[in-house]
Length: 227
Picture 1 (spheres, rainbow, N blue to C red):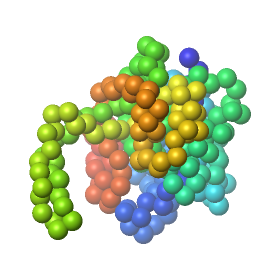
Picture 2: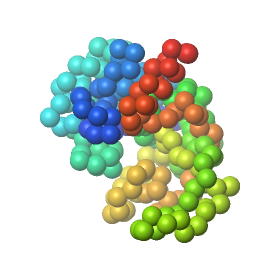
Picture 3: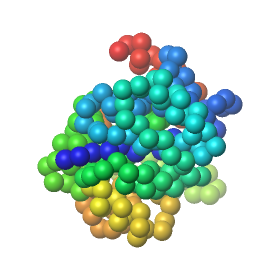
Picture 4: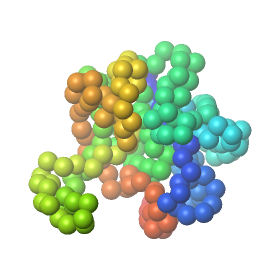
């Protein structure tokens, strides 16, 4: 099975506070995006990585990746104003990579996903699943809250899971999902679900957390120090 990866990295990262683009924020002296691409490439499971960067900064992103992951086969394309549009741009670029059977869509902000998680996603695809996502059980109590800031109920968390990346898809299935689904979604598996295609889950990892706020940068530094 020939696998490519798409990394949407065009977001500004407003919740991280002032600074450069989110994907270029340094953790231990290395941009998040470089950590993410290194992690994918080190698995030897992907044959190429397509990065969707801010359209006006593709050259800068190419330079950063050439320095940070010089041995990787990386293609940088202009992304969109939403994550979904960035993934769509990445899908278009996959055509230039030669024959590809499946794609992994991976958030640059989940830069420290363990290799074992990537391996589990790929194993699911190779076993015949059309879509595979890593998940963790929800640990917190979840409440429904009305507009008046009043709790209206407590959700049974026994069947709730937090979804991570990389998410793996047969290429034809993900293409169909993007072609036939008009809604905006926060992850790609939701688009595949809308087609009625079963989505398989595999075990995720606490280390695959999403760097979103300043505290997450501190957690990332601590994780790398421990590694």
